Length: 232
Image 1 (spheres, rainbow, N blue to C red):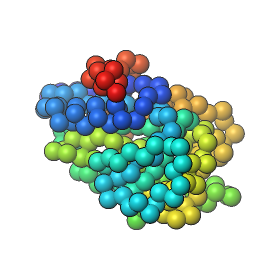
Image 2: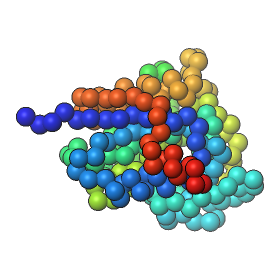
Image 3: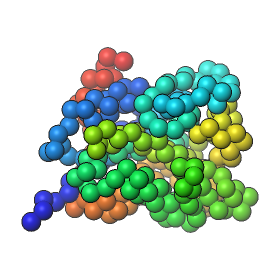
Image 4: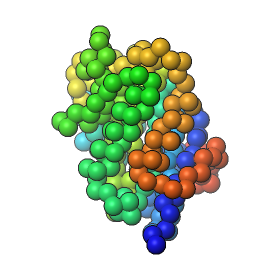
């Protein structure tokens, strides 16, 4: 009989970008066939992140917000308070998934999460991410994706705009698209939304979608992340 799929979900609150990124990368390099998959859910202080193929021309006027060049796919995006960031640290080979399967699963996860708040959304094959159909916001982007898969193990992930200041998106061409309208869950639903509540809904949907039978939810940081923060 196949062993039960196990997932650790960590709610990290608001944590600086660089220690989280460095820790994710190190853990991905160190993990082996027995390492339990994890999903990290969190917020970041204001930061722009520029993907591996990122072009400087898409950074229009970052101003006082730092820019970090990172090793994920994609162009430039913004992270800030009020945005739910999810980092799936998964062994996708063990899950029986390819990279495209994982992207599709994450896009569907976001679509299903916002649907729980009465919002209709959809992915675009030619422009990764999730977009909404709401009148007045049709075609606006509510979530961005940027993954890295190394030796069948994933890190980086998704950013879902929940209830945040969207102004910094005006300082960039989001994901490399000039004039792309960004939106957020709070503008599209009559429900009261919080990043923590949306994180809990996403956890439930993520576990079901990828077939995890054993899920533990914790607010404890990974020990390696605590060490990275202390040295940052």
